[in-house]
Image (tube, rainbow over all chains, first blue to last red; front, side, top):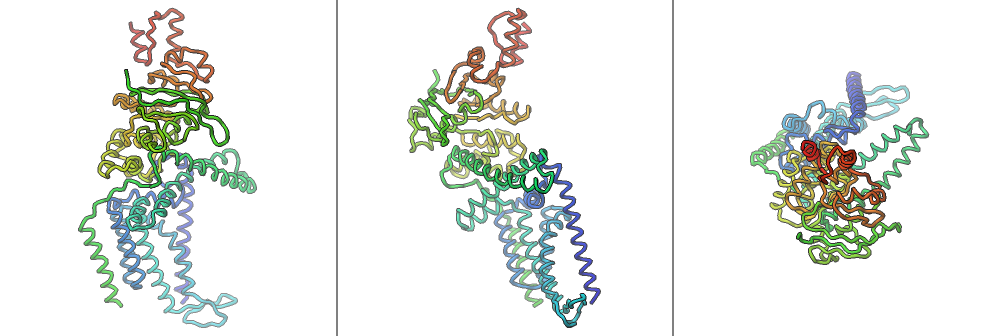
Length: 300
Length: 275
């Protein structure tokens, strides 16, 4: 019993160490990148996920195909509820993203670390319970109460972990290979209401503009000792926030003018190109899906 | 005689805060003219452009496009034929890939998709940015964004192109590339209006200069006339182009003969010196 707990602790420690190291690397790399527009991640994870979508080798694949494949895999992974299926999904999606998409393994793992932390924290509570009495298959005395678990529960935790992880890697395959604009395009084709689709594309573009503006304001505040102590930092943060509101209103106006100047008349339509879908891709995807179902059928 | 393409009559515009931005502007613009619009900050140049393009509605005054009075119904016709390249490319770029961005105008013109694709490819080719086609705008440099914003307008194939301070915040190389594009567009017979603070550029490029001061056009003529009129220059917070100053002082010191040659470029100046 102790072995398992020690193992768990060691695993958790490595994960946390990895996150901590990763964040430190980011803090270091983000500073000098603020003012050049070169490709690369600048402001943490949000930026890099978006960046990898553009850098991915499988970006050329048909977006609809990718979105449907990933959503279907996700649904199968959850509905079939089978550890073998989950493992297959994890491996297949990692293969697609890392080998086919040519995204560095370390980067892929570092992106997955964020959800892994949440999954571990939540599945841990599934496996472990507390009690005043020393009950359960395995228990650990914590001084004031017992923490206990059983083989069955640990198994359940592991399966749940695999299932969630498989589902996440399926979605990650989509986000790491399809730029947001193409995902929005797929949604438009899937008859998602126009207002939502239009808002999505505007918000997506605006996120980067707002981030840019806030970085610039922050930098100029920093250069004038705006963050010298705790109180000043609060004051500066508030000023920047209120200033951002005014600037976004102004920008919205300027945008509207620019859109009107280009004959905008209430319908936000963008040029979207259909990428060719290859029969072999569909065939392979079908084989993959059928394989998942068969696997589930034989290991039930 | 060139054909009249745009006629503006007694344009008045006041902003919501009561500040009068245009105060009776009248001007005739002919086909293929290269016009520089100069004047200090806040003199009404940008407001003038937005009015001309029909984005802002003037309180008073008329705009004629090829002898047709512009009203609410045919406003789209005006916007279709006049394109504005805005000063800040970030305020213009709206789509999340370059090709979608350049295709935004043509899509709004309700052109068939094949035509839109063709125009996008042409415009990107024209601005030499075909390789950026699938890039998102937030990973582009300032100069690249500017090119995209110009390609936006080229794809619309408008007859009149307005540039609002195009050289602001561009490095010398990008500014030079911009001037090449302007020359190329000029050769194609496009009518161009450019607002700028760069007197040297104005002197070199423009055929006609409009000087704005407090919402009025205080002078309208060739660059040479304008830059020799000290009174106007002082009123509009402008200075003389370096080349003109150099030439005039050389003539004054009788190093050069006063043949009224007025060189517009270093090249021309060298030719004069060589003679």
